[in-house]
Each structure stands twice: as C-alpha cells, then as structure tokens.
Image (tube, rainbow, N blue to C red):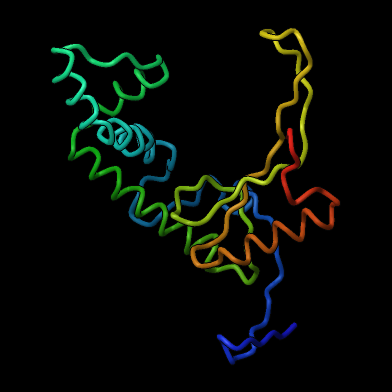
Length: 192
C-alpha cells in the first residue's frame, strides 16, 4: 500500500508487521564477529557493570549530602536498593567502560542481524538494551489472593514490544491497531 504525505512527498510502501522471537532467529551458534561463541558468558556481568554502576553513581551527590548532614551515617534504603548499590559500587570505571563497549558490540550486532536486515517492520520480543523504543501494552489481568488484605486482587498481564530506532510512530500505531482489533481498551478507565 502506498502512502504519501506533505512532510514526505515520496510515496512510502508499508512493510508487513511480524513478531520475532529471539530464539527462533538467533541460534546459540550465532554471535557477533570477534566475540566468544557463548554470548551468555560474553555478557555475564553486563547488568551490574552498566545499569547497577549507573544506579549507584546517580545517587553519589545524595549520599554525600546525607553523610555531610548526618555525620558519617549513610541513609537507610530498602534491601533491594542496598543490594544494587553494593553491586554498582564494586564496579570500577574501567569495568564499566568495557561493559559499555561489549553492550555496543552486541547492540550493533542485534540491529544488523535481527532488525535492519528484515523486510518487515519488525516487532521483536527483546530486552530494551538496543536504545530503541519499547512500550508495555496491557493485555489482561490475572486474579490472585492477597496475603495482606485477604481479598482477591488483579495483577496486570502485559506484553513488551520494541521497534527499531526511528520507528516510534509505527510501533505506537501498530500497538493501537492490535488493541483495537482485539477489542481491548486503548484508554485507562477510572479505578483501573
């Protein structure tokens, strides 16, 4: 189908949408050139050496200010934050730099292998490490018994979808079409 608009006078042909499951398109034998065959080992500490490092250092000023105000006493944070701060604090700047390099190699490889080479407007089920837009789309809910209130509550069921960089509008349009065709709401109702 050809489409033409004022902002782009050239007609554009819309590519078909497809869902890509990572394991279907990237067999274990596939990996970036010049890297070990075991991608899991190659990316082993990536989360701690990038995300936790950034998480820890993003609060450096807060911790310093707190210690200055309270005399050597670090602020209390929940155990979840304590664990991530400890992991992030243990990462050296050179480890962080190397992890970012690895992430860049892996990200480029995924773009070239899985997204850029596709003929379709790819919708991939991938982690959002590629610097691409991803959105979480609610598709339902599941009842559970709350141990706190003793009542039945509902947990959301969602799908995380991602598009190649620069395809933001297509991703949002595609998600909206899917929601409409499956007769799911596209707005949040009061009390939802």
